[in-house]
Image 1 (tube, rainbow, N blue to C red):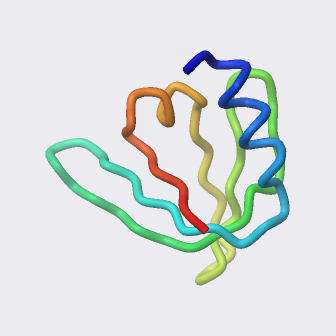
Image 2: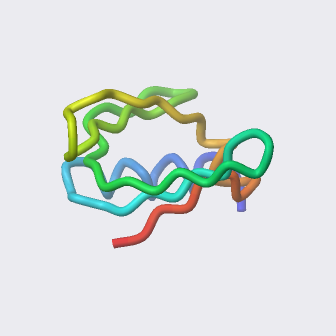
Length: 71
């Protein structure tokens, strides 16, 4: 899986409500629902549905399985 493939897949999901699971530091797992609102060359921005907060992630988070996205 290369970064261009991941970037194109994320771009195709922009604006849709998705479920995110992020494996953070010290084995902390955070799950939330949100929408991908912006995509850039190195990162993408997610707006959470619950409280309208903004989170940003890199495409490498998906490649390394630190972040999982499901519908």
